[in-house]
Length: 67
Image (cartoon, rainbow, N blue to C red; front, side, top):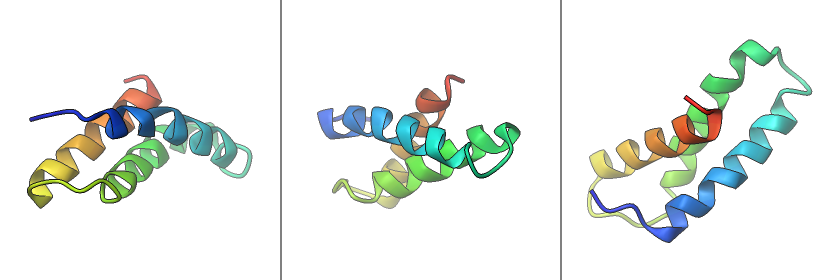
């Protein structure tokens, strides 16, 4: 799996959007929100297959949430 610079650039974006979301929902939902935003944001980056896109989105989401 190749991690592109665009995927790495999604991490701060997901972190920021998760911080904004925490203003409106309980903090316990932050990792799930980060995971969903990571997977959703990964579909903005062209990849060779859907499974690699989902996997890279999971990596971005977990990285952004600190897990």
